[in-house]
Structures are given as structure tokens and as C-alpha cells.
Image (tube, rainbow, N blue to C red; front, side, top):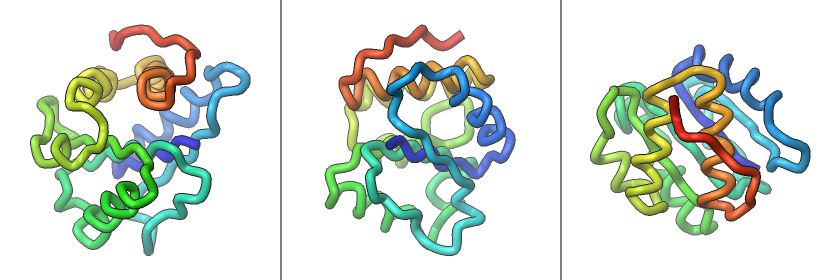
Amino acid sequence: MILFLSNADTELLALRVAVEGLPAGFPPVRAANPATLGRLPSLDGVRVVILRLLGGAQAWPDHFENLRELCAERRIAFLAFGGEAVPDAELTVASTVPSATITEAFGYLVQGGVSNLEHLLRFVADTVLLEGFGFEPAV
């Protein structure tokens, strides 16, 4: 399962549509706004966490570090991104995948839109989970 957390509600709405375009057999995708969660989300069955925080780690001060540590303990890939048009160095360092993967994945988020979110999920599934669904570059 891929857990996508974003404090941008418009991104979560676009993600809902993007998931509809994923092929059969694609890992399930669960999404939430971390600001509306009273606690850390369940990581049962989760293989990848994608976290997008407009405002950086300070946007979720009570849980960011705990989520990162829990992902590390459970060997869950953790990809963290800020909401600006340039990478957030603190979130890049906190991520547990190579920085080149973070850089490429960030391109999909910067470009935005349903198609880019779909291909972000495909990119993560293929490069992090080694699935093989195929993906297009961000446009």
C-alpha cells in the first residue's frame, strides 16, 4: 500500500481522480490530510509513505519526526516533500530513498495536476517498490 499524506486538500482531490487511472494490480493507495488526523496514521500494510507538507516539517510538528522514525523502524520507504517550487532540504534529508528519487518525484508535485499525480504514483511503485507498471516523466 502507498500512503499519501498532504496538507493540500486540492492535491488530495486530484489524487482521488488520479488513482482511478491506475492499472489493475496496482498497490492500493490511501490518502489523508495529516492536519486532520488526531494521531499518526496506521502503517499496517503500508510499503511507502509519501508526505507533502506545505510549510515544511513545522506544518506537522507533533508527528513528523515520529512518523519518520516509525517508517525507519518498519523499513517503510519515506518520501517527504515541501510545498514550495524548490526542494525542502530538511525534508529531502529526512527521506529514506536516494535524493535522486526525491528530486525526480518532486518534479511531479511541482508540475501538479491529475496526470502528474498518477505518474508520481507509478514512478514510486516502479523505482521504490520495483513493480513495473511504467510511468511517464512529469509534464
